[in-house]
Length: 397
Ligand code: ADP
Ligand code: MG
Image: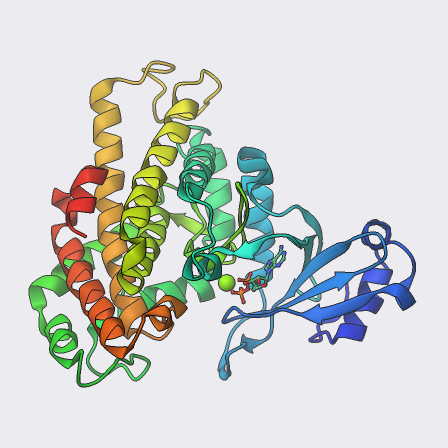
């Protein structure tokens, strides 16, 4: 096993040269290869290495948060990302990049380079994303969540997978702190917001004990409802897109949790895009409806197949009773609404905010977009248990 060191471009090229399968993808020899850093996420280093025949994407963890080296972070996160890719790929096929190689000593993933794709967040801001992309994300969540659920596998197999991802402690801690806790605490120095324009709403959010009780219900859902293997960080920066080819990347936050968490994260990022760029309003509403219908269709398709072997559903399979179907999708929608509310709040006043707001026409429109996100977020958190259809969710926006 290789000893860990943060790789430079030339160190990376030497490492890849020792891998025959990767060398074959690149073609030629090391003198013909070039490495270029493309890191734009918060946590890790990402390089694209190109050769005469092809290219690969290489992602390595650092012992700290890339954008804040004073924040120490265990290296294991790329191992969880690779395990997430291995576990969901049979169910989602080419909706994620192909994993070529994992070096567990260097904490290095070598994967398919999505050379013609663009990160969805940037494409949305530029107005260049093709309409209908969210249906593919819904299908992705439907297939990945069913295949890793208690309906698909005997409980012994689910426990074996949960054991793996329950060790993803450092990144789950980030979610618990940054999404489920910090924005509601007055004394948290990681929060930041446009002041004084948002002060009244931030104070209200941080002093509202009824809201905090609703957040607590979501904390409990997130930590105690291990429904399926989640992506865990499914925002528009974790999707790359080229025409109707939509890929999900960056699964390092993977964990067992409520399916509505992934759907809610993604929904909230579509809402914030529409708030920042009001000309996208009708488009994003359509995408939110497509996200949900894509999810529902994909999940049901597998649920109604006879191949499932899970202990949950063993009495009715392959028939799905309409009462159980209604109950299941309503519960996922309650979670989706609540977690969307949390994402709206944390991306507006928490540590990690989003570029969409900067696409607002001017400061006044940005403040307006952020105020709408806080008001909607708060309402979604409080009323999550009343929202049981995509129409009800869209009515809150
Ligand atoms: P982080 O974990 O630091 O957030 P990401 O996985 O989001 O890192 O990757 C950072 C950036 O690297 C992405 O925004 C994208 O531009 C690029 N990238 C990631 N994976 C690929 C890939 N398979 N092919 C091409 N580019 C990629
Ligand atoms: Mg990322």
